[in-house]
Length: 376
Image (cartoon, rainbow, N blue to C red; front, side, top):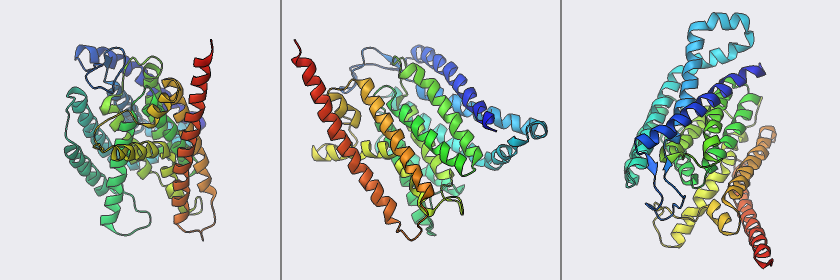
């Protein structure tokens, strides 16, 4: 059974490596480039291809499409020779319709980002808000929704829309250094995959591993050399896909996990939450629009303290993975008498802890820089 998980992962990884190379070539031909100097906060040394997100999107959904075709045409043979595949086949057949509309929503998000990448003025924030509102409404209609054990449709929709909106934009904001947004997404995807495997949601596990493979293939060209960027299209799609997957995944299962487990995604996405909330507060404090980009993100603050850009990215991804792994302890929290405020207080403490870690890291970075400059 374990071998089964490597099929979508490696297929997606190989396709991503191929599509990313193709995206680099076609970005140059179509002049889909991020030109340094056009925006003051962008200081990369040369014009860089911007179609990395399209490569991730194509690799991921091509993998799912090929797997679904295989299941459709070879179901009997697969079950006969590999009986362990039965739960995966049943899961793919059950989710086929919803997958199509997740793909449709992802396509709209990708096109939304491509417009921003091509035209730096892009769409206004309210136009983007409207499009995400309609996508969330479509998913809600297909029963892809957050409930939190609340039987109020309006509140359920508000939670679903808010979650998709926040995470979609958080990963876009996080895309400010090579490998940061995609690397954090790999961490989040793997941790959600662990939860789905433990709870027996095998199709979701395959889905997340295929997504992880598509991200890693892109990272080879992005983190190691910065030869291509995700662009707004890729960062928005990554946030959208993870937001929807977190809704699809049943973190609470009677007899397998406690009710508190529904809060695990909040901890898994603690870094995007922290980065977004902190940069919004800084912009408000400085009297600037929260929609206007700047260089006050978590990664920028670490970089200004003396860390190299690559080290800042590695530190943040490591923190994201560590918090995600620790949050899995909620799967084993059996004290049902605890209030729902308990995990929320834990999350607040996590954000405060991240602030403390940032202050410590910045102090260490300044000391290291100071010792270097003082050497003869």
